[in-house]
Every structure is written in structure tokens, then in C-alpha cells.
Length: 121
Image (tube, rainbow, N blue to C red; front, side, top):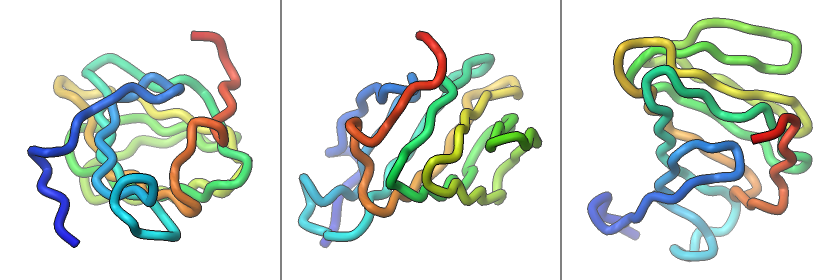
């Protein structure tokens, strides 16, 4: 199944990032996971949040950032991949001069209902 990038509209998630769902069961018919591209503008960051049931993988494709993963804090750059276990508080900030872009794979698929914000907007 092909999903052309130009046909995917972006939206804002509860954590404040701009997301393009590249593949999601609710739209494309796949069954076990979702794949999205997230963008965080230069100087921006997502809100601290967690997913109670979903395991996420973040793969950084452009820009530089700073990841908070539970009690850990570390820089990220293109080529880095981060595993976020279910229930783990996390957020990511764009620290470079340009936007931070990453691929986000979720299993089970991303759901707003599974996202719990841990700080106010």
C-alpha cells in the first residue's frame, strides 16, 4: 500500500507537535502500528506526556534536539533512535537553528485517548 506524502495533512497532537500520519490503521488499513512524521519548530518543545499502552520509537531525521525520557536527559541528532516504553514520561525540544523532524512509530497505533499530558499547555 502506497501513501503519497503530498496527500497527508498535518495536525497538532495533544503534546503540541505537528504530526503527519504516514500510516495509521484508522485510515490505511494496517493493523498493529502507526508511523508519523513529527515536526517541532526551532526553539519549541513538546509537552511532557506519556502513553499508558503505546511503545514509541523516535527516529531523528533532521535538526538537533534534547530528549527527556523518564529521569534521563540527552541530546539527539539525525540518525539517533530512541525507544520510549509505555508509561514513560517524555518530551523533546528542538535545540538547533532549524526545526526538529523525526519519525514516530507507535505500537499499538497512536491514539489521543492514550496520551496523558503531565504538564499544562
